[in-house]
Length: 427
Ligand code: GLC
Image (cartoon, rainbow, N blue to C red; front, side, top):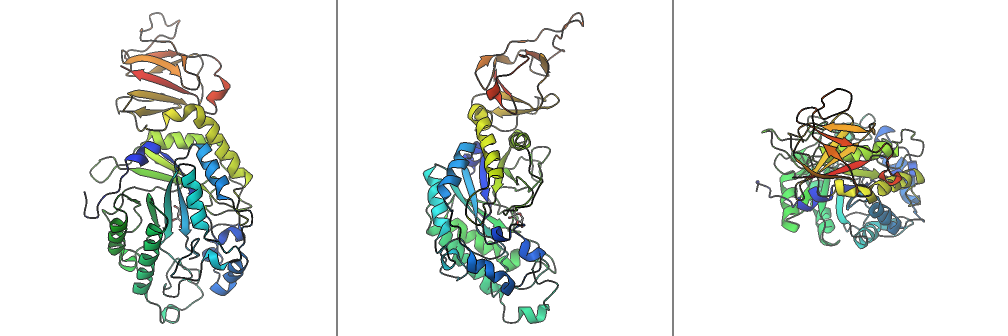
C-alpha cells in the first residue's frame, strides 16, 4: 500500500476490455477533440456549439448494448474534456449539458445505461479546461499565440481552479453511484505547462481515495506513486510493461479506431476489424488491457464505421473470449512461434495460441514437449492432435527437440473468425 493507497485492480486485470467514450461539443466540429486548440478558437467563437448542442438521437442504451455485445466489460466516459464542457448537471458551472438545447444530464443516462448492461463505470476528467475563468494561459491553450499572458491571466487563479476540480470530482464520485475508475488527463509540467503544483494533485488524490477507496486512478496527475495503472496511448507496447525495478505493472492501452478520439467525419485511417482484434490480443498477450475508443456524433449516435468494428469484436469474442478474460502474459519459458501470440490463464492453467496467419498443417511450439494434456480449437471445442516425436527422416514434419507439434486442419471453421485460437490444457 503506497502513500496514496491502492485501487482494486483485480476485476480490471480479469475483464481486460473496455470502451472509451469521447463526447462533447467538439463532436459538432467533427474534426478532432482538440479543435479549439488546433484552430486557436476563442470562447466567443466556440459559443455557437454550446448554444446549438442538441443530440436528438441520443440513446445510450444502444451504446451500452454495442459495448456489451463487443465483449467489453467496463467503460470510461469523458465527463469533461479539455474544452471544459460538462456532460453532467454540475453545481459549479453553467457550462454544462443541462444548459444546452438538449437540457439533460447526459452523463447520468450514460451511467445508468451501461450499468444496466452489466458494465463497470469510469469517468475521464480533464485537468485542462479551456473555458474556466480561473484557468491560466499555457502552451496548450487555444489562445497561446493570440493572447498576452499577463493580460489573459489577470484575475485568474489556479488555486480556485484546483478547488473547482475537487468540487466537481466530489460530485462525480458521490452522485452517480459506485464509480470504478477515475481517469485524469493530463499533465505537461514545465515553464509553459501545468503539473502537480497547479492541479494540487496530492489533495486531489487524497480526496478521491477518501470518497472511493477502491477506485482505480490513472497515472497522469504528475504525482509518482499515485497511479494504479500505466496508460500508453495510441501505440501498443511490444512487451509487458514494468516499473523502474523491473516488476510488472498493471497497464491499459487506450486506442482509437481512426486516430481521433472525438468524432471525426472525414478521417480516413480507420483500422480494419482484423487490426482491431489483433490489437486486443497484443495487449492481453503482453499483460495489458485495451480501452477502445468511440466518438459519438453530435446527434448522439455511434456511426456505422465504429459500430461495424464493435460488431467485429463481438463476433470474435463470442467464440474466443475465453482466451481474453482472466488471461494475461504467458510464463516467459513459453515462446510463441512467428505470427502467433500467447495468452495464459493462470487459474485454469490453459495456454491460448492466437494465429495472426494460419499455418499449413503443422506448427511447432518450442518448450512444450510433455507439457500438453489436451488441445482443441477454441471456437468449436474440436480436438487438435499433437505429438512430441522428434523427426527422423526430414520427410515429415516431426517436432524439433523440446517442442510439441500440433496437427492443424487446412481449413478452420468460419466462427474462428479473424484470428483462430487453439486452447492448450497444460499438465
Ligand atoms: C490525450 C489527449 C486527449 C485524449 C487522451 C486519451 O491526452 O489530450 O484528447 O482524451 O489523450 O488518452
